[in-house]
Structures are given as structure tokens and as C-alpha cells.
Length: 313
Length: 135
Image 1 (cartoon, each protein chain N blue to C red):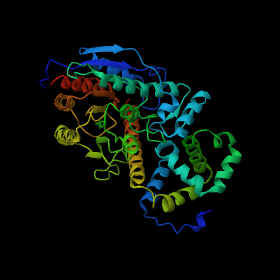
Image 2: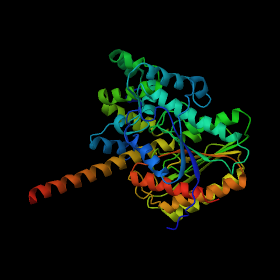
Image 3: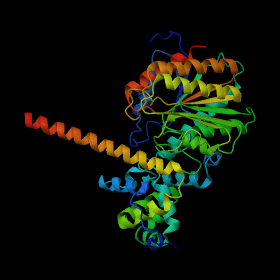
Image 4: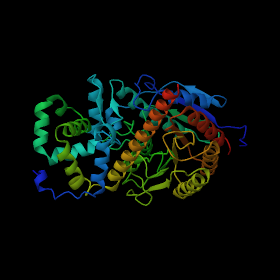
């Protein structure tokens, strides 16, 4: 594969609590170490972690009862299970609320930059995950929906009128879709394997006002992924968002054991390249959050290719 | 309150019933494998108030937990232990027949995943055995 030597300048944020959180099933801090390895050789600058969101702030996208419940459980020093994979530990509150606040703060900061072409690409390396968490539930390693919180916080400031959330993690972004089901100012686009975990996201099943589900089948690879991705970017272009948030999951990679799709490194390079071109045309901020990825090869190579692609404007 | 007596006679070819039987054959519980266990628990909490009362009596701390999702998850776990057969009939013939499509789809995914895992594990075991014999 002929990849350009030029790559995007990245400003990576490793949030407070990411390494303190115990391993939850397949979600370990190892993924962040692999993500950091992917940044090696790129123009990446690591920034300190940022502050945590308060329960009141998080209730912007989650029910007060859910947020308060997570807060109380973390304070109680108990370990409580919410689904077969998701446990709440005493460290969970800080880890999850700071992951959400980090993405929101970084997003707000990116909105202040007048010349987006000069801005380094913010990339949040967070843990626990984000896109499966719905308004009143956690699911599949995700406690709070950082993407939804960042989008809603940006809309609340009135600096933006519309947000597009693009999610190519191989699992459906069910929580993001559910949270914005009635919100026309947010376009949610998810490209994922179906049928697959978490069971939702069938193409054409969209209940939300501005939502698009593009499905991949087991065995699908670069060609099918590019077709779906082109369609997704066309939809975003038509939507003309003031802000783009990206859930950068690389678990669709051929080397990732959790999925049955066969994305190659060049698939992720293409994803980055096409998105960078769209962002340049729109002249609007783009903020990235790391998504799924469960083998070293998938995370290091997939993210590295994506970042190289993002440098192609 | 509804009880199993009011549930229509089980149809043995119902998709969810077959899936639940397969899961049980693998000696697995929904609480250990199915991501939406808490949804099942939440439904059962309203549907089987007698089981909920039993749960509250036997597990007062878990029943009073501050987060509904945690309670519902724990309650499903309890129901699977205390009322396994009745639970599967209830779920197959009252819950999954009316539930949103994704809940059944994910049950299929779950059973397929663990069936595959079990088959792979048997292959590994069988390879191990043949290696041991060869040695």
C-alpha cells in the first residue's frame, strides 16, 4: 500500500482515570497503549488530562436517575454488574465522567479556532467506551456516551447549530442513535456489521429523525467499506454540520478477532483521507475519539493508517 | 399479576424458545451472556411481582440498590436460579413475542457466538488430546 509520508498533526488527550479503571472483560487499558503506539512516528502531542463532568452536566444526555445511580454506586465502594460485561467499580465514576468531559472540553476548544486548516486534530484516547451507552443505561463497556455529551454541550453553547457524529466502529452506535432520536440538529451515522452485537442497527430500521445505519456483512472488506463510507460522507456533506465528531473504532480490521469483516489498513487510510477532504471543504472542526479495537495489530496499524489518511487534505 | 398459567401453551418451534434451549444446552445463563439481561429483569420485575417479593426478601440489599439497571440485572440472575423453566417459557411466549426486533436479534447473536466458542473449544481440546496421545 502506498501511503503518503505526510500525516495529520494530532493533539492526543489521555484522560484522567483511564489507567486506574480495572479491566472490564475485553476492555483493558492495553488498547490505549496500542493507540499511543499508533501515534508514534506521527506528529502527536500528548496533553494532560482534563477535568471530570458533574452529575448535573451529564444529565444533559442521560437521565438524572441513571447518572446519580452510577455516582452513588462508585461512591459506595461496591463492585456492581450492569450487564454481562459492564461492572461499576469505585474508580468508574472518575474514569467515565472525565472521559466525557475531556471530549466535550476538547470539542469546545476546537470550536474557538477560526482557521480549522491550521488546527491540530484533537484525538481523545478514553476509557471506558462511549457509543453503546444510552440515555438511561450502560452497555457493552460503555457507561456514559461521550460523543452525545460533547455534541449536546456544543449545541448548548449556541456556537454550533448542527453536529454530525460519524461512527465506523464495527458495532452499532446504538446509544448515540437513541439519545438523539428526536434531535434534528444531530446527524448520527453508523457503519457496522449486522447482524452483530448489540443486535440493533438494521439498515432501514432508523427510528431517529436524523440517523443513518449502513450495514456490513460478515466477510465484507475494503470495497464494501468504501462504498458505505462514501455514502456516509455524502449524507454528512448534505447535512452541512458545524462540527463533526468521529468514533474511530478499528475493530472491523481483518486482524481483529471480535468481528467478521475484513477491513485492511488501506480501508482506514481511505476513511481518514476522505474525511479530511470533506472537513477541508466544510471548514468545520473535526474531533476524534478512539473506539473499539481488540488486537494490537488492528489498533496500531488501523489507527496509524487512519491518521496518515487524515493528513491528506 | 400474570402467571405462567395464563401464558398460552408453548410453541416448541418459537425462535426465542429454541434459542433459549440452545443456551441452556451450553450450560449458560442469560445473565452471564446476554447483554440485555437487565431489560429482561426490568420486565420481570413488573410482570412477576411474586418473584420480585421473593427477591426483596432474600436479597434486600440488591433489591434496594440505587441504580435500577443494576437491580434489574441482579433480579434476572435471581430468576434464572430460582425459576429456570418457568422463566424461559415466560420470556419466549410473553416477552420476546412483543419485544423490539433487536432484542431477539441479539439473542441470536449471543447463542451463535457461544455455540461457535464452544465448538472452537472442543476443537482445541480434541487437538490437545491428540497431541497428548501422540506424545
